[in-house]
Length: 325
Image (cartoon, rainbow, N blue to C red; front, top):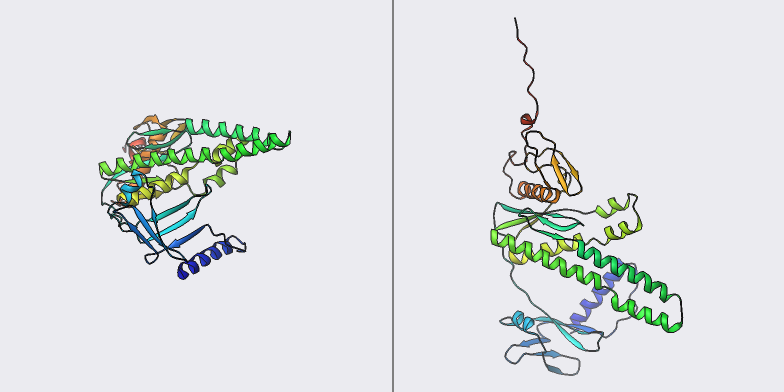
């Protein structure tokens, strides 16, 4: 117990030092347990926890989902926490061996966006209209409640603050649920087709877009775009299922034709290849996802210069010939 206490204090002090703050006190709301102070008994669904006074045996109120996760396991660590509802919860930690990523040449490219949250090279897409509508709705509601919280009577201000607290994070939870479903579907598709996943590395895109002149609504919509959360969910689920997730440079992926690799013209959702020999026309996000798949294949499974080489001679006119007398 003393060792766990030292670990907790050290971790809290390290976090406070990184944030430039001081650790003044600790609230008795949680404590960590290891193999000596914690034991899980599957036969009667109880846990045995050592405290400063005596060892306690507590019955677990677990759902079928959690029972399925715990069945057949022997966890050796947990964290006991006091939640806001006044009840104590046991956060049991499970360890499992992750499978090694499968070696394959098949690849699924994923194009991230705001209009369509994700478009895959296999033809699947998830629209972002619903999440944008939800975020716009909660933004209007929060603006109205914040105005009421600073005006009116004392009771109306208190009521507005209570509603704001209740609504806090609701849109974020919906976004996380949506990203979980999208990432799960993509990883399942990759698992069934024995493919790895190629995504675009959008690090720093917010700084680039915020440097451009835009109205307040567009700035809010862009800053609330949870592309990194979707990437994290894909990587986590990929590790669990043994699916490799590769991040590639997104430069020119939305402007290059996936058929001939020539620069084309993108107008909203339409893409047209400028190469007269190719002339591919179709959905811009679909084209981008296929280009990302090509880049991912070149990074993860190099096959030489033929993978990302374009036959430039096919699109150029033939040189004139000069007849010699």
